[in-house]
Length: 171
Image (cartoon, rainbow, N blue to C red; front, side, top):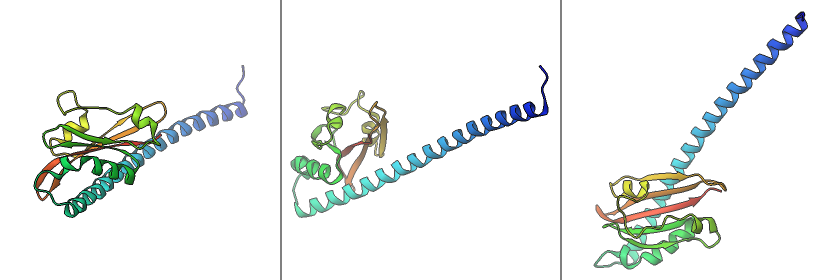
């Protein structure tokens, strides 16, 4: 088979187009991944700030002698869940589960929730990190879309009151 200049031009053009498309796809995927991670980190930082401010205000309005998180865990979890449309679980400073509120219009949060009575070796990574004084999140990929688990230690006036864990539905 004799290759004419027209055929050679078409083959070279096709190869260049193919490599350009693959390279463009890879670059776009990396940019999208970086943007998504930056967006998630900003969202969890904002969530941590707003929920901590809400809990501080709640404590000022409801002064207690003991640990107000333990006494008002149901109210706090329900209000935070309503405000953020996410599942909210509260743990005391010893790692014992206190209360969890799940929005009723988010059934995937109920189906895929990680229920834990206390924090130990078999706990999820974000809870372990939170009890080591670090904010942390993990992403659980699902068929319907990812779930984001975010936990942080709750300090008020340099006292650890417990851990707050949010579960967000990104389906």
